[in-house]
Image 1: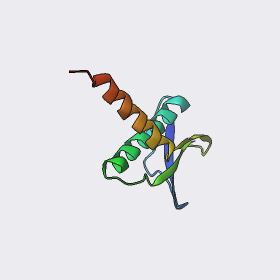
Image 2 (image 1 turned 180 degrees about the vertical axis):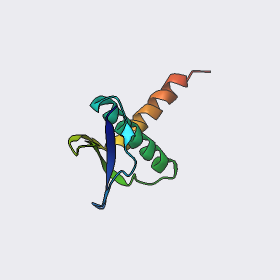
Image 3 (image 1 turned 120 degrees about the vertical axis):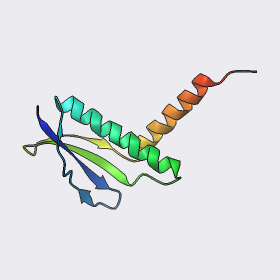
Amino acid sequence: MPHYMINLRLLGGEFVPDTEPADLPDDGAALNEARKAALEIAGDALRVHQRPAVKEFEVRREDGTIVGTVCGEPEAAAQLRYEIAKSIAGCSRAI
């Protein structure tokens, strides 16, 4: 199974390399992991009324090839707000 790194680029421009490669079946799975991480970090930030600190997630194969990037902010925060609103609307009912 291929190894992937999901590196972070913070809002201030700092690059944070992934130090623990993940074994994932393919590029799509690696990008999905980055999307999940983006939503998780956005959710953590929203819970404490802060802006997510990660600007971008960079997905690389072990050989250094960049598979793609996932926006961390503000897109992830907006997506999370949408999912929350959808969830609330789905459980609302008139009394």
